[in-house]
Amino acid sequence: MDVHGGGTGAGKLTRTPSSLLRSPTVRNCSSFQAVVVEDPEPDDKKAQAHPKPPPHHFHPGGGSNHPLLVLVLPLAFLPLLLLLRSTHSRSAPVDLPSSACPACSARLLQWFIGDDDDKPQKRADKAAAAPHGRVVREGVEFYSNGDCYEGEFHKGNCNGSGVYNFFGKGKYEGDWVDGKYDGYGVESWARGSRYRGQYRQGLRHGHGVYRFYSGDCYAGEWAGGQSHGIGAQTCSDGSSYVGEFKCGVKHGLGSYHFRNGDRYAGEYFGDKIHGFGVYSFANGHCYEGSWHEGKKQGFGMYTFRNGDKRSGDWDSGTLKTPLPPADPSVQRAVQAAQRAAENAFRLPRVDEQVHRAVMAANRAATAARVAAIKAVQNRMDGKFCETYV
Image (cartoon, rainbow, N blue to C red):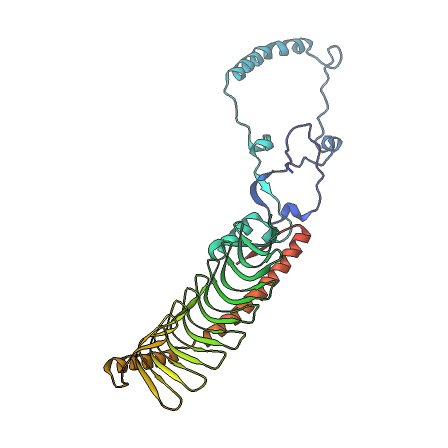
């Protein structure tokens, strides 16, 4: 509240021994004006402190020997009084000292009680000193579709750590940047699917593991929300693939172990065996050569478990033109298939990178749950919790 001094109508303030008037926490601001404390001594004590001299009495007929002097003296001083009055009326206005107008010359004061961090200037300095000047608040936000976010905010967006609950579907726990998944996190769905790993701009990107509710699993590299790069895919039926992916499908070099015991190592294109590769059957037979969309196509050689061979030009899985195994075209196709299979087995593994990403995602999910608890507590208290980062 503002208190203005000066003026006879203002109530008198009683001086107290409070240390607030001497507190070093007083600062200049536009919130308060200086408090003018009137003299606490009553008027009767003022009169006692400055007694007036006794009045002089003139007795014309009594003790005075000059009765005419009493009449002449006032007349003699009358012109002088008139001259002083005229001079004063023509003089310029005089500036009063500051003590004569305390309300006009008072300095503005702001009072702070408590910790220095409660001062707006201190808080502003602290926020400016924080990295990037970010002020993170934990809170709860509900959406019209039933979704809910609990965690940290910055500039009105989900930023930092937090938990996003998809109404009746699942949730995400982890890092956020400008309202999108970014960093590490854990994504869980109601049917049982779960992803743990890295994100970028709201999409799975980096290294991570996705376990499907059906029991299938992919662990490896991601880009743009899809399996992309080197990874390992295992299926609930017992089949598995280790190799290269592109845009969510097998593409490049890889090796596949089928549930019936068959094995293939070589080239893939568009999620199908395509190019050169070696297919080993569970019964001991083997084909080495060219493939097209999962079928034997072009030159290649089929070897039975008893050692017999059939080679030549194949079309849609059927030998169209038989050729001897020593034919140059057959030999070139067989050698290309063997090289592709060998390169597929030599692909680098990313198991260690995936493991580190999963551990980081678990830590990020834990931090998100802690932020969500703080957010719920703040909502119950009806406030935000400020944290400088």
